[in-house]
Length: 103
Image 1 (spheres, rainbow, N blue to C red):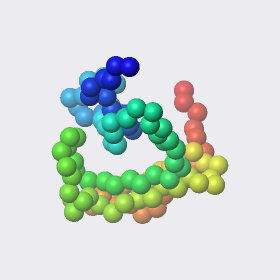
Image 2: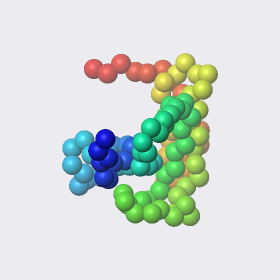
Image 3: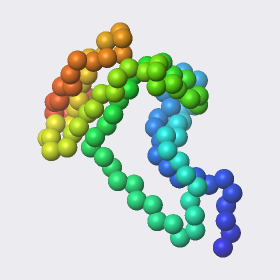
Image 4: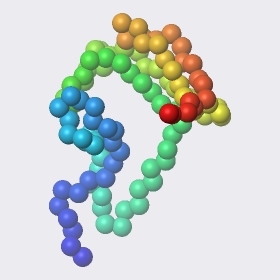
């Protein structure tokens, strides 16, 4: 069996920076797989959102970020969450609604 160098698995998100190539992914959590290793990635219905200034690829200080917002879809039939972001990176409340049809 030939082992490949520089192989990583993990979770990422779309890179939305202005200089990103189409369909680019920013790694969020990555690790090097080991032979015969079993990894379970369980989807979550709870999301935490933090707003602030950051640069992809650089460490971000939590001091520069606003308070975290919890969006919890557990036991909800709604599939959309809307928040109203203020200029100081805070938001008042999370509003849940059903998914809307795309044209």
